[in-house]
Image 1: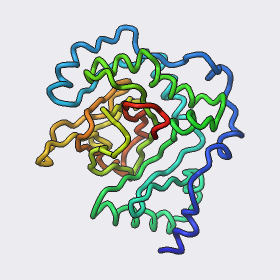
Image 2: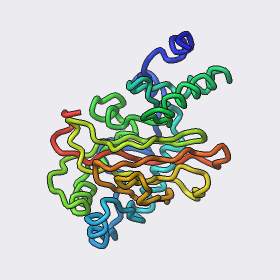
Image 3: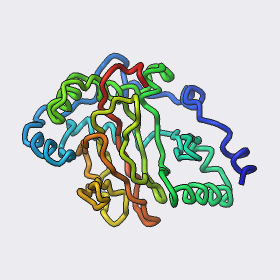
Image 4: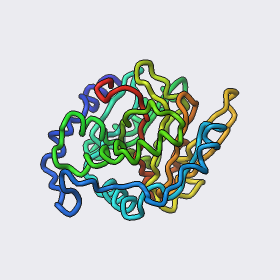
Length: 275
Protein backbone atom coordinates (compact mmCIF):
# COMPACT_ATOMS: atom_id res chain seq x y z
CA UNK A 1 0.00 0.00 0.00
CA UNK A 2 2.77 2.47 0.93
CA UNK A 3 4.55 1.65 -2.33
CA UNK A 4 1.43 2.64 -4.24
CA UNK A 5 1.30 5.96 -2.39
CA UNK A 6 4.97 6.68 -2.98
CA UNK A 7 4.52 6.01 -6.67
CA UNK A 8 1.15 7.59 -7.29
CA UNK A 9 0.79 10.31 -4.66
CA UNK A 10 4.09 12.10 -5.08
CA UNK A 11 2.74 15.56 -4.27
CA UNK A 12 0.35 18.32 -5.13
CA UNK A 13 -0.31 19.45 -8.66
CA UNK A 14 1.46 22.65 -9.66
CA UNK A 15 -1.10 24.72 -11.51
CA UNK A 16 1.49 27.07 -13.00
CA UNK A 17 3.15 24.15 -14.79
CA UNK A 18 -0.14 22.50 -15.76
CA UNK A 19 -1.96 25.50 -17.14
CA UNK A 20 0.54 27.83 -18.86
CA UNK A 21 0.46 25.81 -22.07
CA UNK A 22 -3.31 26.20 -22.33
CA UNK A 23 -4.32 29.30 -24.30
CA UNK A 24 -7.64 30.90 -23.41
CA UNK A 25 -9.25 32.54 -26.46
CA UNK A 26 -9.79 36.29 -26.11
CA UNK A 27 -13.53 35.79 -26.58
CA UNK A 28 -13.63 33.84 -23.30
CA UNK A 29 -11.73 36.29 -21.11
CA UNK A 30 -10.29 39.77 -21.42
CA UNK A 31 -8.31 40.84 -18.36
CA UNK A 32 -9.88 43.74 -16.48
CA UNK A 33 -13.43 43.22 -17.74
CA UNK A 34 -16.08 41.74 -15.45
CA UNK A 35 -17.43 38.80 -17.38
CA UNK A 36 -19.89 37.07 -15.05
CA UNK A 37 -22.78 38.81 -13.32
CA UNK A 38 -25.60 37.98 -10.92
CA UNK A 39 -29.10 38.44 -12.30
CA UNK A 40 -30.34 42.02 -12.56
CA UNK A 41 -33.82 40.79 -11.59
CA UNK A 42 -32.62 38.95 -8.49
CA UNK A 43 -34.72 39.69 -5.41
CA UNK A 44 -33.10 38.36 -2.23
CA UNK A 45 -35.77 39.65 0.14
CA UNK A 46 -38.21 36.69 -0.14
CA UNK A 47 -35.44 34.30 0.95
CA UNK A 48 -34.13 36.21 3.98
CA UNK A 49 -36.76 34.97 6.42
CA UNK A 50 -36.30 31.36 5.31
CA UNK A 51 -32.57 31.63 5.84
CA UNK A 52 -33.05 33.25 9.25
CA UNK A 53 -35.36 30.41 10.29
CA UNK A 54 -33.77 27.38 8.64
CA UNK A 55 -30.16 28.44 8.14
CA UNK A 56 -30.24 27.18 4.55
CA UNK A 57 -31.88 28.32 1.34
CA UNK A 58 -31.77 27.67 -2.41
CA UNK A 59 -32.24 30.73 -4.63
CA UNK A 60 -33.10 30.00 -8.30
CA UNK A 61 -31.97 31.98 -11.36
CA UNK A 62 -29.11 33.55 -9.43
CA UNK A 63 -26.83 34.52 -12.32
CA UNK A 64 -27.65 36.19 -15.58
CA UNK A 65 -28.50 33.43 -18.03
CA UNK A 66 -25.53 34.15 -20.28
CA UNK A 67 -23.18 34.13 -17.27
CA UNK A 68 -24.46 30.76 -16.07
CA UNK A 69 -24.03 29.28 -19.54
CA UNK A 70 -20.53 30.71 -19.91
CA UNK A 71 -19.46 29.43 -16.48
CA UNK A 72 -20.79 25.97 -17.27
CA UNK A 73 -18.87 25.94 -20.54
CA UNK A 74 -15.70 27.18 -18.83
CA UNK A 75 -15.78 24.25 -16.39
CA UNK A 76 -16.87 21.66 -18.93
CA UNK A 77 -13.96 22.62 -21.21
CA UNK A 78 -11.25 22.65 -18.52
CA UNK A 79 -8.42 20.27 -19.47
CA UNK A 80 -6.91 20.01 -15.99
CA UNK A 81 -8.40 19.29 -12.56
CA UNK A 82 -7.18 18.08 -9.21
CA UNK A 83 -8.57 14.92 -7.65
CA UNK A 84 -8.95 15.70 -3.96
CA UNK A 85 -9.24 13.39 -0.95
CA UNK A 86 -8.24 13.11 2.70
CA UNK A 87 -5.32 10.87 3.65
CA UNK A 88 -4.92 10.51 7.40
CA UNK A 89 -6.21 14.01 8.07
CA UNK A 90 -4.07 15.62 5.36
CA UNK A 91 -5.58 17.08 2.20
CA UNK A 92 -4.18 15.54 -0.99
CA UNK A 93 -4.47 16.89 -4.53
CA UNK A 94 -3.60 14.65 -7.46
CA UNK A 95 -3.54 15.58 -11.12
CA UNK A 96 -6.70 14.11 -12.59
CA UNK A 97 -4.92 13.92 -15.94
CA UNK A 98 -2.29 11.68 -14.33
CA UNK A 99 -4.94 9.66 -12.48
CA UNK A 100 -6.76 8.97 -15.74
CA UNK A 101 -3.59 7.25 -16.98
CA UNK A 102 -3.28 4.92 -14.00
CA UNK A 103 -3.86 1.21 -14.27
CA UNK A 104 -7.14 -0.27 -13.05
CA UNK A 105 -5.27 -1.77 -10.09
CA UNK A 106 -3.85 1.60 -9.04
CA UNK A 107 -7.30 3.22 -9.23
CA UNK A 108 -8.81 0.37 -7.24
CA UNK A 109 -6.13 0.74 -4.57
CA UNK A 110 -6.88 4.46 -4.23
CA UNK A 111 -10.60 3.74 -3.94
CA UNK A 112 -9.95 1.22 -1.18
CA UNK A 113 -7.84 3.75 0.73
CA UNK A 114 -10.49 6.45 0.35
CA UNK A 115 -13.35 4.14 1.36
CA UNK A 116 -11.46 2.76 4.37
CA UNK A 117 -11.12 6.23 5.84
CA UNK A 118 -14.69 7.15 4.90
CA UNK A 119 -15.92 4.16 6.91
CA UNK A 120 -14.51 5.53 10.17
CA UNK A 121 -14.33 9.31 9.72
CA UNK A 122 -14.35 12.37 7.53
CA UNK A 123 -13.55 11.82 3.86
CA UNK A 124 -14.18 13.32 0.44
CA UNK A 125 -13.41 12.37 -3.14
CA UNK A 126 -14.08 14.76 -6.03
CA UNK A 127 -12.46 16.91 -8.71
CA UNK A 128 -11.54 20.48 -7.91
CA UNK A 129 -9.78 23.58 -9.23
CA UNK A 130 -8.42 25.90 -6.48
CA UNK A 131 -9.62 29.18 -7.98
CA UNK A 132 -8.85 31.12 -4.79
CA UNK A 133 -5.19 30.10 -4.90
CA UNK A 134 -4.93 30.75 -8.63
CA UNK A 135 -6.18 34.32 -8.16
CA UNK A 136 -4.57 35.36 -4.87
CA UNK A 137 -1.18 33.86 -5.75
CA UNK A 138 -1.31 35.13 -9.34
CA UNK A 139 -0.57 31.65 -10.65
CA UNK A 140 -2.31 32.06 -14.00
CA UNK A 141 -2.37 35.71 -15.08
CA UNK A 142 -4.96 36.32 -17.79
CA UNK A 143 -6.65 32.94 -17.36
CA UNK A 144 -10.44 32.85 -17.45
CA UNK A 145 -10.53 31.13 -14.06
CA UNK A 146 -9.55 34.42 -12.39
CA UNK A 147 -12.90 35.91 -13.36
CA UNK A 148 -14.67 33.39 -11.11
CA UNK A 149 -12.94 34.92 -8.09
CA UNK A 150 -13.86 38.38 -9.35
CA UNK A 151 -17.51 37.33 -9.62
CA UNK A 152 -17.83 36.10 -6.04
CA UNK A 153 -15.92 39.09 -4.69
CA UNK A 154 -17.87 41.67 -6.68
CA UNK A 155 -19.88 44.25 -4.77
CA UNK A 156 -23.09 42.82 -6.26
CA UNK A 157 -22.38 39.26 -5.09
CA UNK A 158 -21.12 40.16 -1.62
CA UNK A 159 -23.91 42.70 -1.14
CA UNK A 160 -26.57 40.14 -1.98
CA UNK A 161 -24.98 37.58 0.37
CA UNK A 162 -24.79 40.10 3.25
CA UNK A 163 -28.49 40.85 2.82
CA UNK A 164 -29.45 37.19 2.56
CA UNK A 165 -27.40 36.03 5.55
CA UNK A 166 -28.05 39.19 7.57
CA UNK A 167 -24.39 39.77 8.38
CA UNK A 168 -22.60 42.92 7.25
CA UNK A 169 -19.25 41.61 8.52
CA UNK A 170 -18.84 39.39 5.42
CA UNK A 171 -15.86 40.91 3.63
CA UNK A 172 -14.79 38.38 1.00
CA UNK A 173 -15.51 34.97 -0.50
CA UNK A 174 -13.06 32.19 -1.17
CA UNK A 175 -13.84 29.87 -4.04
CA UNK A 176 -13.13 26.62 -5.84
CA UNK A 177 -14.65 24.88 -8.82
CA UNK A 178 -15.81 21.30 -8.24
CA UNK A 179 -16.93 18.39 -10.36
CA UNK A 180 -18.55 15.35 -8.75
CA UNK A 181 -18.56 12.33 -11.02
CA UNK A 182 -19.25 8.61 -10.62
CA UNK A 183 -17.91 7.38 -7.28
CA UNK A 184 -17.42 10.85 -5.80
CA UNK A 185 -18.83 12.03 -2.47
CA UNK A 186 -18.40 14.33 0.53
CA UNK A 187 -18.99 12.88 4.00
CA UNK A 188 -20.82 14.71 6.77
CA UNK A 189 -18.96 17.63 8.37
CA UNK A 190 -19.76 21.16 9.54
CA UNK A 191 -17.10 23.48 7.92
CA UNK A 192 -16.17 24.87 11.35
CA UNK A 193 -12.41 25.42 11.06
CA UNK A 194 -10.75 27.62 13.67
CA UNK A 195 -9.28 30.82 12.29
CA UNK A 196 -11.10 30.70 8.94
CA UNK A 197 -13.82 33.15 10.05
CA UNK A 198 -16.50 31.44 7.98
CA UNK A 199 -19.98 32.95 8.26
CA UNK A 200 -21.78 30.89 5.63
CA UNK A 201 -21.11 28.61 2.67
CA UNK A 202 -22.42 28.90 -0.88
CA UNK A 203 -22.76 26.57 -3.87
CA UNK A 204 -23.58 27.90 -7.34
CA UNK A 205 -25.03 24.90 -9.20
CA UNK A 206 -23.98 24.59 -12.83
CA UNK A 207 -25.44 21.20 -13.72
CA UNK A 208 -28.31 20.72 -16.14
CA UNK A 209 -30.86 17.88 -15.99
CA UNK A 210 -29.37 16.16 -12.95
CA UNK A 211 -31.55 13.27 -11.80
CA UNK A 212 -32.10 12.79 -8.08
CA UNK A 213 -31.40 9.04 -8.17
CA UNK A 214 -27.93 9.70 -9.60
CA UNK A 215 -26.80 10.73 -6.12
CA UNK A 216 -24.77 13.90 -5.59
CA UNK A 217 -27.56 15.28 -3.40
CA UNK A 218 -26.73 18.06 -0.95
CA UNK A 219 -28.00 17.09 2.51
CA UNK A 220 -28.31 19.37 5.54
CA UNK A 221 -28.62 17.62 8.91
CA UNK A 222 -30.28 18.37 12.22
CA UNK A 223 -28.42 18.01 15.51
CA UNK A 224 -29.78 14.46 15.88
CA UNK A 225 -28.34 13.57 12.43
CA UNK A 226 -31.76 13.37 10.81
CA UNK A 227 -31.98 15.01 7.39
CA UNK A 228 -33.39 18.55 7.56
CA UNK A 229 -33.13 19.44 3.86
CA UNK A 230 -32.10 17.65 0.66
CA UNK A 231 -31.32 19.78 -2.39
CA UNK A 232 -30.99 18.32 -5.87
CA UNK A 233 -28.57 20.25 -8.11
CA UNK A 234 -30.57 22.79 -10.12
CA UNK A 235 -28.90 24.74 -12.90
CA UNK A 236 -28.16 28.37 -11.98
CA UNK A 237 -29.45 28.06 -8.41
CA UNK A 238 -27.33 29.03 -5.42
CA UNK A 239 -27.43 27.13 -2.14
CA UNK A 240 -26.42 29.14 0.92
CA UNK A 241 -26.19 27.74 4.44
CA UNK A 242 -24.98 28.95 7.81
CA UNK A 243 -21.64 27.75 9.23
CA UNK A 244 -21.31 25.64 11.30
CA UNK A 245 -23.96 23.21 10.04
CA UNK A 246 -23.59 19.51 9.37
CA UNK A 247 -23.96 18.63 5.68
CA UNK A 248 -22.81 16.19 3.03
CA UNK A 249 -22.94 15.38 -0.69
CA UNK A 250 -24.22 11.87 -1.30
CA UNK A 251 -22.32 9.25 -3.30
CA UNK A 252 -22.63 9.67 -7.07
CA UNK A 253 -23.88 6.41 -8.53
CA UNK A 254 -22.10 4.38 -11.24
CA UNK A 255 -24.97 5.13 -13.64
CA UNK A 256 -24.90 8.94 -13.24
CA UNK A 257 -25.10 10.47 -16.68
CA UNK A 258 -22.88 13.51 -16.33
CA UNK A 259 -20.69 15.73 -14.18
CA UNK A 260 -22.07 17.67 -11.21
CA UNK A 261 -20.37 21.05 -11.71
CA UNK A 262 -20.44 23.87 -9.18
CA UNK A 263 -18.69 26.98 -7.94
CA UNK A 264 -18.43 26.81 -4.17
CA UNK A 265 -16.75 28.42 -1.19
CA UNK A 266 -17.27 30.32 2.04
CA UNK A 267 -18.39 33.82 2.91
CA UNK A 268 -15.81 35.05 5.37
CA UNK A 269 -14.86 37.87 7.71
CA UNK A 270 -11.41 39.45 7.71
CA UNK A 271 -9.12 39.68 4.69
CA UNK A 272 -8.09 37.21 1.98
CA UNK A 273 -4.60 37.10 3.44
CA UNK A 274 -6.01 35.26 6.49
CA UNK A 275 -6.22 31.93 4.64
